[in-house]
Image 1 (cartoon, rainbow over the protein chains, first blue to last red):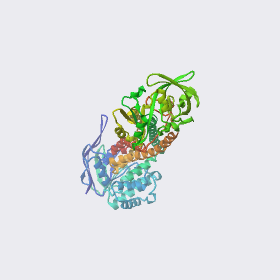
Image 2 (image 1 turned 120 degrees about the horizontal axis):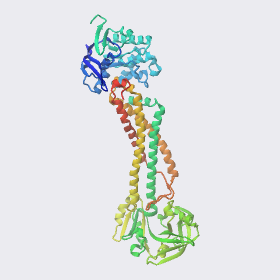
Image 3 (image 1 turned 180 degrees about the horizontal axis):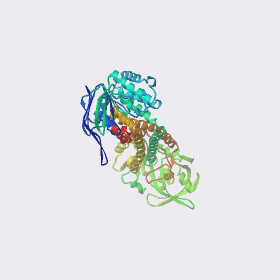
Image 4 (image 1 turned 120 degrees about the vertical axis):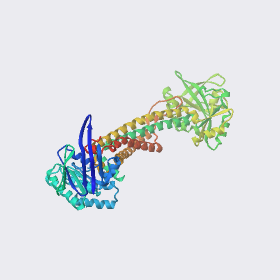
Length: 231
Length: 406
């Protein structure tokens, strides 16, 4: 089953009189349970594509479908609702709320979707345990290492049990060891829970984890390969 | 909502100095408003109460054709047999005291100096004279049968260098137009703490005032105090007759009432200026917070927080600043107002014709004014936060995540 489908998507940024075409007619379908890497050089459009799939941005033309729901013409609040229920995010910078503890950061999406307190507590503890940070639950981001912060971000992304996790350069600011830890956790969760991961990266170590690699160049998909040999 | 306040509380604590200064701005603004309101209230209430207790009473009964400014002593302009009229009025249940008074212009002559004054013939036994009796600085209050004694105000005494037992001459024009001059002895010196009054008023027993002015059993007016000032109109209605005019304290003090309205309108402009400055500080603080936390706003938006939720975050922060500011304002303002309630602000001989200001303004803060100002300050602070809150709420998540949403 398709978790997301992007059809003929273009994205044109206009700065003053200058137009920049970040995406030039992209078609992409991501199946349930895939572990997909979007790769390509800087400026190839991989982050822009990830933002369109994540409903953080809207295509200039074309459409985006999430879990079978056409999302292109949703308003700001409807997109927020769909993000809350269906999509988790892991960003390159360790995108945690600095005033909240690790526990509270993971809890935040559950508060937003109205999960009851007992279920919330259980879920947060499960997620922190899954990323190996139960003992850091009450630490604030500035008391955690970069790798630990990114693991909290992964736990937060998974807390509402979404079908799709989008990660933009998740290891770019991590050293080799921490980057490996984060990728190992993401791969394990993909296998254990079946959650779909799509991550933008140009780190060859990360690309090795993917079972599907989509290559972008100048705003178009130039290659789409699966490790099981499917085209 | 609890989560919004929890996050807001921690955000307020992020930059403690800035938050403290913002709350202080709200607090100082509110304290200033409390002081302004209480001083205005104290000034107006004090002037009105002073004018009522010294000059106008709650009601004043006069002959139908009496003109206050002329101080006419013609019999047709006076009330005949005023003691009897006052006694009848005093029988009314709403009336505390009713007493006849005779007003006349006079010239006070000393050997080398003279000064225009106003004689007030009073019934020394009347309870209406309590303010003068309480204000005695030296000597004794006059007796009803005293034929030479007068009381003078302390300002007049100072200016003419008069003391108790000093002798003065008073020159008056009588009811029939003759000039009469008689010697008097200063029995006592009083103060009403109202410079304009204490410089120009001389008291003598009503009978003596009637004798020197040849008005015989007549008075200029009946001075009436009521148990409740709000009964003035009803009692005035009951006392209306063809040959007497009944004036309520509102009618007699229209200038004070109008002056209060004018002052209130003027002060509203000052309030708005103070609140405007306070609001600007709050807006500035929160706009800075929005700029600093653009990326966090993007994160919250990305994980599904709607614009309303983000707006609520900043409104909650403003509510916390407002709460701290209002509490601080109540403490600072309360202390300052308490000081000026006890010690007052010295204004000296400041006067407006027809209004009797004391030489000090005492702050008078009512519960209603305090509650109103607290609510107004709170609401203005929240209104001031609407712009930054909307700014945050309207950010596109993708731009906010890149720290460029504003």
